[in-house]
Image 1 (cartoon, one colour):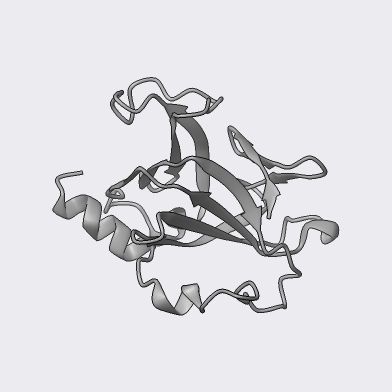
Image 2: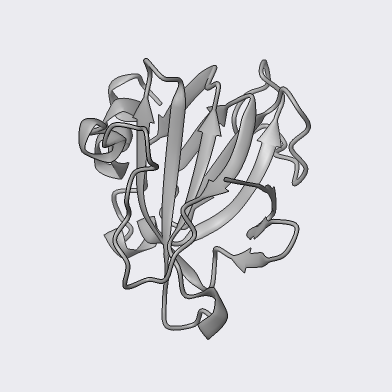
Length: 167
């Protein structure tokens, strides 16, 4: 795992900066409430530089808040894969009431997609995991159970969750 941070459309580590709006497609979100872990997965698209052609899994640990706001039904589903921006809000602030590009400790990350779909996740830590080439399959870390087969929340079900909760 590598520590990371978000800056608008970019995922930054100590050694790399990934453009999640233009060069990566959002694939899925999983949430394991018992483990308090959420994972967001991106795959490189045709615009990604050759040295960045690997899957990215952002892992948020110590999740204290997980919510979704439904997508705009009038927009094509292809817009669900395109990140619009990432920012932060204070834990007691409304989701869309002044999202800041910096996410201080204790604040919630707000992931906004071009379709209007919004994920809000409050977590103790954020890191990027499992960097690999795009033709490798995602494998669990040694010593862990296959968490990806156990977690069934996807972008589609997260959208339904947000709609069911009036989000």
